[in-house]
Length: 293
Image (cartoon, rainbow, N blue to C red; front, side):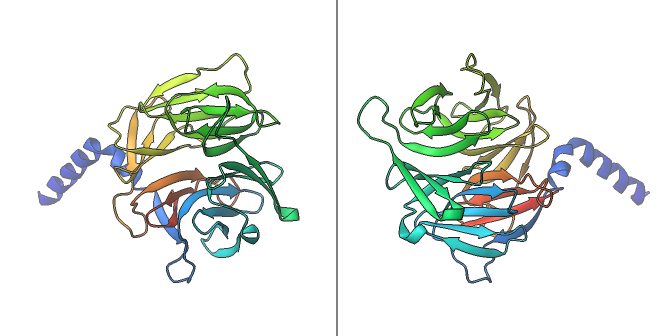
């Protein structure tokens, strides 16, 4: 009799909370840097994944360094361009293997050619019609460079001369490039999907997120089309359907592996070895946690 009651109770629980069961399949595997490694980061502000080299690069803003980790979380190297990297707060990667940074200190875009260890800096003037304060830089494979501008709150499409040729979104918090589109997280708890290669499309498709967000900070889109939102107020990563319905949440407040204090960026790894893995960069915990299903 007691066994039957236990089974019934479990069935009721599973039917009532199906989404928590889905969340449980995300397992935190490692934290980088490993607390035992001796590697310390001063401020983790951005990361990017290089599928060719199978590496995660993490920008340390205060130290002005770029750290490389393998897909086991082991620290491989660091690079500071002879102290000329500035204060990197965002980083993206072209197909050619060239990096683009936002240098907060110089209010500039910086291009790094790894093979030549050469930096090229492109400053933005704070006076004039095109004044901007870049917050994030994104590379779109067809449309080129996109910059989230703090002054206007727009995502700006730049031409080869870094002049503005298009504007998307309003009160933008984050932007990512995925599946040939731009996905823009806005302050009104919505995500706007835009095709920047289509000159006639400027407003895009708006997706309302059906959840009470506290302080959304970052966006990512899974290969299956789900929207992942990092929230610094909730200290969680929230997962939404393509239509904006909340499915489940990952993590909780804390500073140990698998918990967050201030999630700043989330990233899916798109390579044979890293396929399906989710990296979460935490600014306060000064680390990257890697999750797998």
